[in-house]
Length: 408
Ligand SMILES: Cc1cc2nc3c(=O)[nH]c(=O)nc-3n(C[C@H](O)[C@H](O)[C@H](O)COP(=O)(O)OP(=O)(O)OC[C@H]3O[C@@H](n4cnc5c(N)ncnc54)[C@H](O)[C@@H]3O)c2cc1C
Image (cartoon, rainbow, N blue to C red; front, side, top):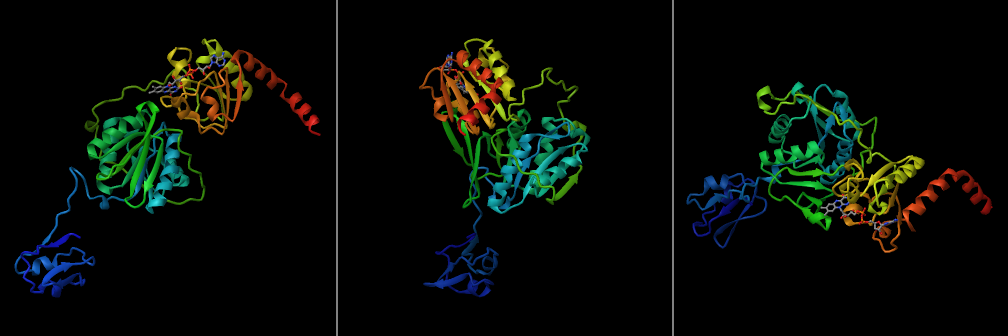
């Protein structure tokens, strides 16, 4: 209730009861009492001859906002060179679920230059609305440019939730926006839920080196902002027939708004391994003993049509590039088949692969924690098991024939 009676001043004259259009005031023991029909219209405040009724200013916690003014779920649809990143599609999938639960529209925020096709794609993936800022200064990512455009949009349209992929760009952009809007940001979330009663986003992320999962809420500030780990959420399904509203606009952005100028974009010489895209991953750990061990891992990966992953211990040892690392500080993967060779199964490694459909572990220690998540386990030396496995795969057709014959 936003109108209150100061009992000591009330003389029980009843004028307020007569002027109230909503029957929201009763006279009890010669004092005016406001009931829950009150809409805070303020007519009683005007009518009271003794100033016994006043409008209560809404009190917000330090720097907080009236959260009821903010509605809708937004996702930042990151694109590079006119291609939507997978994490953008994952966020549309996750954002859709949250928006449906809160019964609000899902909006994708797309920034770029002449990439109309992507706006349509976002609708087909599940966005109800795409706010598409089209400008030649948005061609390449700049912190200043992207922050300004999104900040202006938030000020104007007031979303209650904003999700950003925790890519290099997203991790740069998210905090800049949240500081400018003065709201909370939870970085690198791996799970999101909503508390429907308070419309709060429950943002869960690993903390203390992955030994603790922290669930963080942002009660008094809006929008509630999260960066979300790529590869963790499921991708949205594409529906050719889906319809939505594309709001294409030219943002108010000038050259001088952007302090850091991008003079050149240099792509890494080596194509990064596409771990998140792969259905089959064969990973090696410190159990390989030396970098040459990865040749065996590569052989098996090739045989299975997959790619090579690695534990952090091997990356730290300089045996393999960081782009192969799976885990909390590497990539999060969910392939159909994950083969862990000589990997102990530390919690930080499991954080990146335990959602895989089938996990096979090869380790000479029968008590290694990796066996707790493995669907199939082989206790043995990788240097004995892997060559046998590779050879067996050469003869897989013969083996299958023999197997079928046995079961006839
Ligand atoms: C903040 C933080 C973030 C981290 N992020 C990551 C991350 O993203 N990814 C990650 O992987 N780790 C991460 N770590 C490190 C993690 O805690 C472990 O140290 C790491 O995963 C261990 O790698 P490993 O399993 O290869 O090595 P080890 O733990 O040393 O395990 C080697 C395993 O190989 C087995 N073995 C040895 N010889 C053989 C053999 N011949 N044949 C078969 N098996 C054999 C051993 O029994 C053992 O189980 C992180 C740690 C911290 C603190």
